[in-house]
Image 1 (cartoon, rainbow, N blue to C red):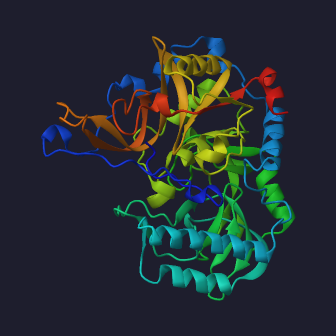
Image 2: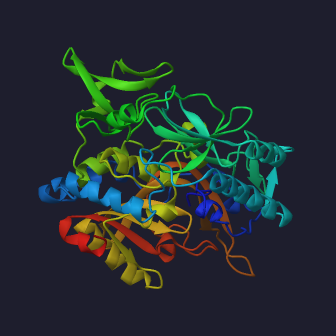
Length: 447
């Protein structure tokens, strides 16, 4: 699935612990790297394929008007389905922050005792010392250069056993150009404890502007005349949003973070952005989602890549929807939430297709979240950032089916039969919740 998914405090260690896989020396059962997703054609990995199956009305229907998006965001913050509003006064005390940091360290310690985690030498001691020296700070800053958001205050890694160095469990997220953080604490040697709205954690201190006033930060985040990135363009990332400044040769300049503070800068290529926050339609969402096909998978944004929940987070951000940073929080974040746990595969397929007719749908299962894109002959399909999948080997072993790991490591479309006949089970079997972003008639469930 998504593999190792980034999560945050509370759900921080509600990770998908993958079942052990019985492998054979047979070539048919050996793990495969850069493996294609089975049963997916090149055409099915394009937005055009799925949009051409819809009517003009279905493609371009506004699913959530801007006023409803604002209501939804306020609701998600109130219900803690989005962790925080960085512009609001901090609700936690210094004692709360220390306790939260100690809880994270204690969970790693428990995992070490149980043979689950293997930290780098001195990692936990280093983190504990920084936590003890934490002093209260309250500053707003913006990110001008991509930086790592660490779960505990150390750059040293923590791995799950068996070790895969691409899955550092101390990597909570990345922070990118245009994000605003609230600095809530500083260690003696300069590590900062920050809330990024979608998650919280520690940064080593670089990559942030000098402190901003509340008014500067508010204007930067909420100015109505905005430019929104609808595809990646170097350091400019899909989903990022900036105030428009002035026009040069017909193109708006932007206000963006720099090492000296907020400043007017030249925009990225015109093909990467739109003027104004776009309204949510299937066409716009699918075009953004499929623009990332083939983009590398990265647990916790390692190397600047995306895992499954960062992928859906960034797509939603284009339309002003504020999702949390992990799949658990995102699974509660729709204008409507449909529980399907315990239903038969047939009933789940029917519920997914019905929900897809109402609006944009995220499909959630423990450890993974996907964007539903349509159905073919009643079989639902989705797109997501996938680390790896399991498939049965043939022939079956005398003591039951053997399986192998396909390391896909990228954004791709898939059906929901992936994993059928393995210890991980098929996606459709594992889906427990549908997250629907629907037209206003779907809203009374939450509002």
